[in-house]
Picture 1 (cartoon, rainbow over the protein chains, first blue to last red):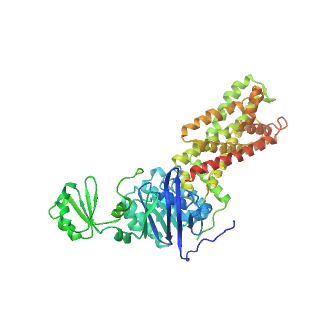
Picture 2: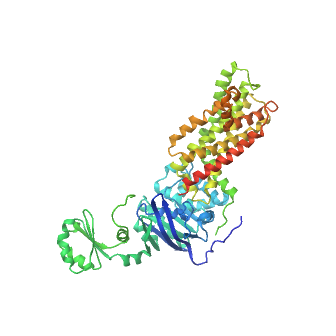
Picture 3: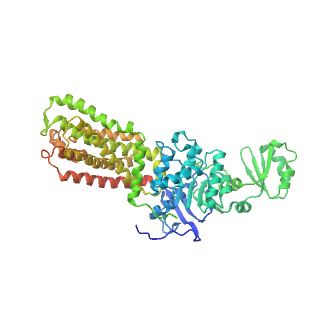
Length: 321
Length: 258
């Protein structure tokens, strides 16, 4: 088979993934609207957004599982390949963890991996060594002969991750890798992703967990309704976009006692049915105002990615959530 | 960095191998019925009813029926595999979503599926053939080649079933396919009695049915010299598989790629 292009070599600089003007329409629904981004080698980029924001669709388009709307200005480049026509080259260099586990229930743990090692063209002997290594890496060695039904949700997820690593990928595409998992498993997966990143693997993930993005991502992309709303390093975005301190009032009724104390200070107010959040740059002011309240009635804290996320995407539920 | 993508054959083999491994896990429950079903038919109909019948198309009835069953077995196994089986992998198990994340294309995936159904057709035919030989119904001979016809019958019904599956939104709709098309072929494709016994007006319908041609080829190999081999039947099998398979894969691709 003749190769048209050589994939960019590991030493080469420039982005591993570059995309511009990705659009995807399902009937009248604009699932992805003119999305563009680029990912540097060895970094981790997290796509954040509510359900239905278009994150998964973008991931699928990158490895050819989805097709973007045919438009002349759409540009997608993964390792120098275009997924529209060169999906095999891309998938050979990538590991994908889909949102659903899709394991073969009839087979046990090691057989699941044996079957998939064939897809990457790995011979029997090399596969056996690679599988042992990956089971060890994902702490599944003692489950080698277990049936899939006997595995917990966290074990299944780890197995799918091991499966995605069979081909020694340079790029990992992870669609909600830790959704629904307990904190222990989540920590283990984060730990492994850090290890992989250190060895130069580029990671692209979608998540609902702000902590996950803060833990792993060098850069976050916040999406909503198919649009990219914000892009940048999480810490920088946080400082630029959100006031550093928050006063949470658990009971709206207390607002009348607090609000006169703001004086001339700029305070941003987010009102929920029961609670009110006040965002401000002045922590001492916020602290001085709550003196008369009992501890259970309020909470003064630093703002975090969750606040950024809610500010950017709005706090009302959309029709897909 | 490993940038050499696997070749087409390696990709097709990987898909086929996946099915072999998954199917092989329950080899007893999956593999025993193909021996038992034709046995029941041969004893029940062949020996029971067949005692009242003499010859069909110049062939003793038991032999006539047995050779027809070689192909119905291949037909049923591959039709089930690529209708219910494919639908479950597609909609319930999401097995294809996982497989398509690996370096294979939709074409690899579905052609591998058709080849796997052909393989099942081969082995199911071989299973029935060994029952036929064990009972001494046919002498060992050219009929040893019938599993290869079973393979092509398997791929033919796999192609057709994939096309049907591409239209199906609810798994229960396959009942229409089986009750309305697959099962009636038992009677209209010359399995239990010759097509020529049917009213003249039905003949063109019989000739259009895929099973008719598979059964005729099988009999040509089972009774060499008595029943002629028609190259038109060979052409029908191959062309049907190619054209219907092409349509099926194209339509299913739209369901597999978002």
